[in-house]
Image (cartoon, rainbow, N blue to C red; front, top):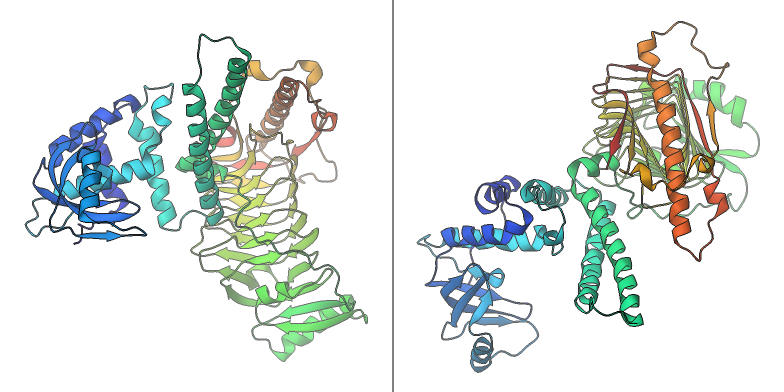
Length: 586
């Protein structure tokens, strides 16, 4: 007893089936009718055997009739009975009794066509597989309740969910994001059940106190449900998933900082796969003797930069000698240390080749990287993520394959004189509440140059941003893009008196170009400043109105008085596909 194998289908095979045969351009309200019509054309009406599969048993049945509108089949038990059970006793009598209780009707979703050498039922098996996959991985119970029923259901829901399913299957989505998606989806199903149950019990004509309480609870559940659905749409949409790189904290390394070495002292970790006597002599003369010759320091030798960083305690220094170092695991920096290349960045290259977590993750309170080149190969995560603490990066080169440098909320990045290119997302992603200083960098040949994020559902402060004398060029989209929620102006909840203090540093005399720059290349500076100021003011009003709406809760004045610092000038924007600056509303 075995069924036809149909669970190996490729993305384009399912895509074509749903678009061309099953759903077409139907609206959400038409999905049921289009599905029934598809099944009526494909599924054999009778005289085929199937395995009726449930959580507790598999049993062989014969289909005698199919009701495509109800998605059910009338079946008879094949005798002698062939079955497999899981944790239960199943007899022929009990199975006949079960079928009689269900009027011999079972869901089509629970039937798998038994393989037949004639091939007469192959299309039936395939149609049921498409049906089963659709209701398991694509359809959501709340889809049919969407107020906007004019959209093409395939374009809006089927295609992005199908793409996400295969991206996850083929390891193209970070593990943390996958976990976040599944947990959010499960919670959304739970809230929908609660909301539907509460709604069905409401009496619209009742004015009792209990009815009013239920109404308030229903509104609360509705808001929670809408927020969860919004999260799912962001992750399901390929563009939003890639551009926004949704805020996921799961999957990150949870190593704690070691702090100072228990026995005291500090260590210089030398990383070198192979070095000549002359190179060692130069290293001692140029670096070790001038800076680390005191009794406080001792030297340890490593051939792997990951092992060197893992061996560090607070205050240690890692010096990487010239060479190409291929690694397969993340560099996780949890203590305040320095990692520097001895030589030019192109001479000190660290290459990560396997899929998995981010290339470099920094959570140390005060970390410094310098004179290094990082190259990604076959990656699905970003090249560097500052999750917390402060990271100073100078004279480094980053050859990205997925996303670039990510500065999480409450983290701080100072990136000076670096070169970053190749990101399929943004070169630098700046989260709300972070501090980011970019001075004298080249950011080019990425999907977007710099991405500044704002989220509507959280009371995050706008980031403090310094951007001075950067060359942002040849990016596919914008040089700088602000991603923010589509908030109506009427919802900002405040007038001019509610605008937060915003410090805009117009020019830094100490950092000026020594030569004239065509105005077309620098025009983006003012546009960025103006948009960030306006966005901060609008969000401040929204935050205040939301907090007032809570009634009993008093607004946190520290939150509402948060200041945004902007120092943006001297940046050059050249040959960016969509221009110097733009906004993306979601």
